[in-house]
Image (cartoon, rainbow over all chains, first blue to last red):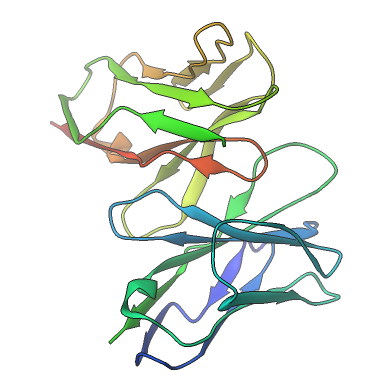
Length: 113
Length: 108
């Protein structure tokens, strides 16, 4: 049973560009959350998707947007990249109904130069 | 807003030593509490959880008790191993507000 799959694993972008990160949730999971983890810091909640809608959002600007597809997979889009967007982006999936706790992917390491 | 305060690291212990990593929280209501572990180069893994006061979560020899009166969820292990070396994160509620993490290194 595959866990949470994220792609790509590493990415280098230039300031001002746009980036799309992808996440496939664990089988049986219906909600996806995205986190930004700067080096040496704890993950910061970006937003959560359920039933193809953004349900909760953390303190991130509108440059960060997302989407959830009918098969529960999700994308994170970041526009007008800044150097400060360089981080590990983690996707976590879970079930809205049922036991607590999320399953995390290994993340996408984004470097903005 | 909700917040988590974790014991600052790094923490270095000898193998078989007793481990405590402190975690306190601020939240409205009665949040669920979690400990996650992150091994080098990997994503986060759920280590244990507790969903109500006085619950004790346990896994792989680690334990943590949800203490509402002290708003704490300290992580403990009686005898650590080299393989426990990782970064440990305390978190609360479904949105997972994380602490800053505590890096643990166990030396043989």
